Image (cartoon, rainbow, N blue to C red; front, side, top):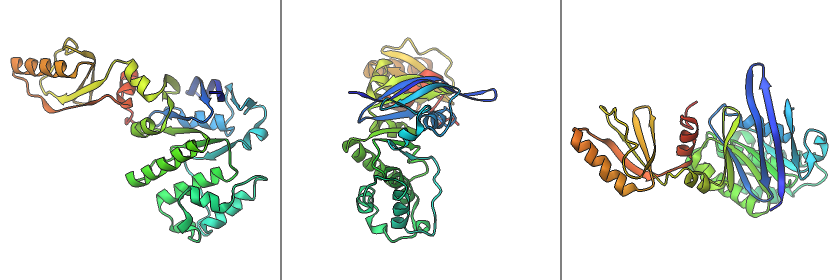
Length: 304
């Protein structure tokens, strides 16, 4: 597939804080590309430089071959942006908001089409202030789509939403991909990244730590399964158990990553019996993107 976006060595500092450090990646036409990382990882700053909202100290972004930094006017017609926080006019109706923003562009979607895309047809005549959090997020995305852009930027689109509204937005995002849009989103939800993203960049402290498909990132670290438990008097190294490829500790929990789950469990139980150890809250699961992040950075995605 052809590259829709190319990012070269983006860097941004605020005083002594290096928010983004030489970030580079490509985004293919028609894919959903994610920036995954905890709060403060540099995701939003990277996105804002890609959108032309923030000037980089170094580096360049090309969208469909056009430089965001050198020709921002041409780029604006190609992109739609949903910011992390969107201020809307509370006393306007949904239809009026969309009509207002549509008037800013020479080319735009019919409001009826936009409402249907976002499942907001029943809220057409509702005041913005009466909408739920999920409906307001859908409206914010609708504003980003009103001029039918080729590329859509979504900054933490589901933060603060309940699981039902989050999944409703996932369906809308997947429908946009099916319609041929190229989508770049930031998230700190590992499940969201796994479900939505064709490829993603894992970011931490302003740098890209890994880049690839969710499945490839997990399998590349040889961690098919995870055994998680608490062991109050544990002090020994368990990396010698059969199948274990890595061992991590998060708070008081021990996580064994393994490519041979049954052998690892057998050895672990024998080890505990031989030493009179108690394995508390023992569970097994498939390895996830959060495990990849923990392996790369030594800390959890959920740590602030």
